[in-house]
Length: 166
Image (cartoon, rainbow, N blue to C red; front, top):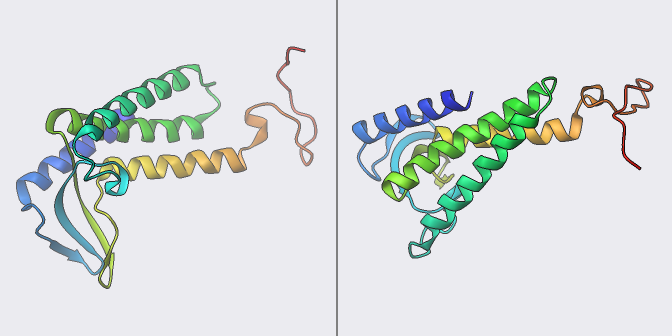
């Protein structure tokens, strides 16, 4: 799934760069433009104007997070599909934006959502995958079917509980 996210992200950015002019909005639907932006910051253009050091900071952070997610995925039990899906979406998005940051020094954003004159910061397919993955991760943590990890559930009775060292 991570590879698919990465391919879709890079393909969409390629078409955005080929078909759009920098900072010129192309209306698609009411509330949606395609607008090519070079984002040197992080999500929602955080630290966009920080002077250049943020490129290496975000490259290092993205690599560390990607390695952590890969290790997490490798150790994840097979019955944790929802969690694996969320982590794979986050990993694919992180790697898609990392590729841009390493090769160009900025991330290509082009999806521009707005209401009246208020615009959400431009984003891309990788950002969308990270956001959806994070939402699934949160939902998985909050409303996890406890039988998946083998703990006691008051409404389901005792489930095989993993042994704990004492």
